Image (cartoon, rainbow, N blue to C red):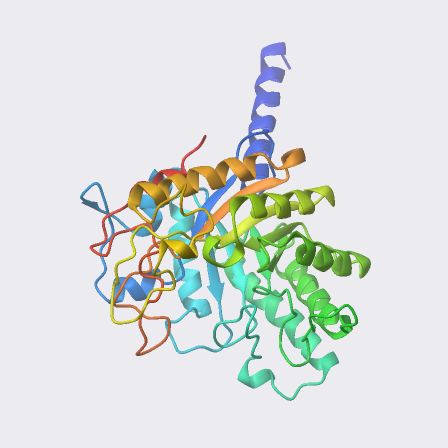
Length: 373
């Protein structure tokens, strides 16, 4: 082989390695955020309701608008046996195919529930209830494996799999409940978590495994979670944090939590975040954020379209400063969730003023957050 030919081969290999590293959430270049994306799980429900997304007046699918603005990934939640068309596996597969077609990596968020699972509720699927811990763990492993295999079969392999959603206090309650005190019994939860991670390795061998907690503004709670999981020897690749300034405190508090995770040698992703662009109501349901006083950094980032965009710019800066390149990026939570789609059948949208689109579907300035630095 000629010298020129060898150089070409080396360049091709380096390009492939860098591409794979970015897709899997690794950070090959200091100062860049390889994961810039959003949870878009409501998209099909919005489209069925007639929502049309536009960017500078031009209509396009949500994932296309994100990709055009520089996004790299989408997150898709999957419930076990929900009503058809509401965060079910079939819907996630459709959205994964669409995301893949525009070059976006797929992150799958397994809730292990038939409905919302978060820090306040972790209801087991109806058909899993009554199982003892051993059978429940076996079911978690096989369900995780089979769900991820479905993405692989359709040619849209999962890049990151999230084993559980906001699992600071465990999952699949009451079996996997972890109490708040230092004397809490972590054993059953860790058994279930280990089964989920094993199922992820079975079903998506090349994917990175993410664990997700809701304590983005609390370094102590976050550190305690990592200590228990680490002591149990459970293998995972990324810690995901929920960080909402109206619940989790200031960006400075987030920064301390990010540093706490990095100090343990862990990569960290802000897996959920949102910020208001207005305080007006979008429908009959009262917004989560109704006053600027609820915003920890409201003086810096007023609840306006430009204030929202400034928040995301500052968030990116905070993540990029995480020592050791451990700050991977962020996922906006449901930027396209607009009225009339509600959080459940017959319900409203209390998140209406937290998206990245106005209620008429027109993109807001915050979409620029998906672009490269």
